[in-house]
Image (cartoon, helix red, strand yellow):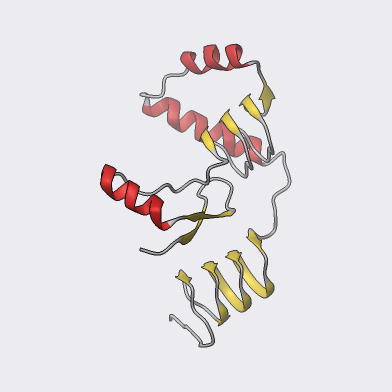
Amino acid sequence: MNSEQRICQNCKQSFIIESEDFMFYEKMKVPPPTWCPECTNVSFSLNLQNCMDCFGCVNLKNKQHCIFNEQYTKEEYEQKMKEFDFGSYSFVQEMKKKVSELSLKYPRRYVEGLNNEQVVGDYIFNSKNVAQCTEVTDCENCKPPIEISKVLPMYASCT
């Protein structure tokens, strides 16, 4: 198996999973990660980059031990996290609503992407001449697919 570039489901940045790592995951019978190595223990959060131990946060970079964008010590963070009832459906719904309301107080990027030239769409990475696409990586001269990866000089079209 070859190395593969993925998009982190948390920070939306690209990261590489090496072929040796895939063999390890297969041997251990676990799926490959969907978050980059920089994003760990982050939940109910939006647009965090290089954050650890964050809950209900929006638009933070290089932070640790935050709850709803408020900084805590490691001990305070751990104590507050113990107070949450993660097994409750109503708690989960309440947290989703609270994060949604918090997110309205912060600006949002108009597009998620990196290392692109002449692209229109969202979640586009390392691509050139891509139009009206979503979730595209390493593509050139593509238009309206829903999700596609590693396509070069051709037009991919879904209707």
